[in-house]
Image 1: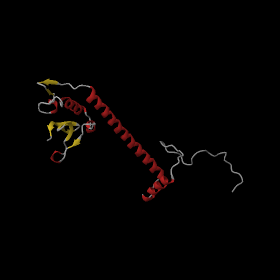
Image 2: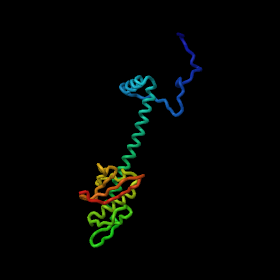
Image 3: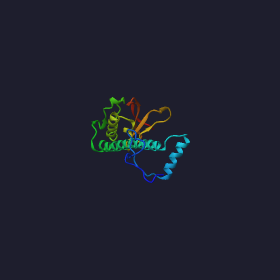
Length: 183
């Protein structure tokens, strides 16, 4: 060992250059975390535990973004349903005390709808017409669920009591829409 070393031509920084798109940082992680990732590398027969940590963080972020999107969709659906179901009156016409809804666009026969069910039915059909995904119909109070048995593939939302609207989804559109009494 020498008494003195000449570092006048030395360069500061890492010995290995940092690859493009990466940044060298100092981070403190629990020993258990490091050991777990190193164990995973050994179990796989090699690799880089730092790369595994980076990949785990990247996966977490992508799932968090998706979760955030789902949360936003749910909140928007709930707020929209409050607006649609509580504020705006449904367009309707009364004929002999019975509300008849313009439901021909949905393939439902022109059957009489009671005054108490008419407003809610029209709102549900409006939601069904504007829904872009099945999740858009999964609003509080609608009790969206898939039917079972021979009717598997058919979805149902509650109107009132025994009344429900059933439908199937084909290429993002509602088909075979029915207003029915299931008892």
